[in-house]
Length: 418
Image (cartoon, rainbow, N blue to C red; front, side, top):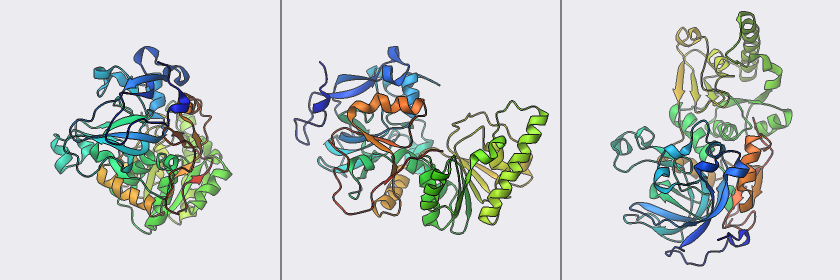
């Protein structure tokens, strides 16, 4: 049956009762490829919640690069992970705002009708790491909407009850759906892993990007001094608006970027530019950074290790330019620096980070809101690097700004990017 896109915002049942089917943007393994081909609108059975699970009516969804990978089937296909083998299809989307529609056995904290956002970390209740170490250490840990079947690009989604957080009422549905994955990742990196302190100095790569805009704001409210690396003056001014001391246009130091294939003379030239960059950072901050916020990987990591001060920390959550890192390790051991890996956040970190959104101390940065029909296009724009910031998708909501019930600053609307 064809799905009427005009009716996606309409649900014929009341909270507590699920309809039989729903509209969803579905990827199947046989059509992995370009997002505009891989994502197809289908009518899917609405799942029932199991124990400690919740079905949420999705009001808006956030777009992340992980479902570009899901569409392509590269670098690995999602169909070898999570519960995909059981269901045979993939519904992407790792950020959402919505309304609790039905709860499973054992759920007591939330009830049908509650307005929520969803964080994307899942782990088995039975794993001991969940109860005494950290859910991110659990062998069952996976990212909802990427390593699981049920994501947010559908009228309904299935999540664990521990994934739910109260929706900030000072944000609209689309604003509330836009920030979770990147913001909660940045929070764990700086607040938990680096134990960021007032007065510390921080270098932020891609400071106008999805992670960087939150890292910059977190530094400001923590009393730390940040310098952001960006790709244009306009993005640099945004970073200053968000609280950075100043910015550096990476195009001025393009020669420091590492490819991994440099010959001796090329590496010597690269190192010279790297030293000039480190000098600029030190001039802006008054000293070398205590912390370097990394997610770029191969191209920047040698510079990060060189630039951070002795006993400083390089914290990394991704490798967007490559994950095979090649750097002069002497600067690490001789100057006793640390490299910290980080991956998303646990439920408590998400809760505490979300409170900063509710209080208006941290603001989402959103570029564009699209209708439900925009899911394939949004991912194609990301693949081709034609997007200019975070994209939200309306699902149950019918227009931007819908859902805000409390006065507040809301999201910053801006064109952003590394």
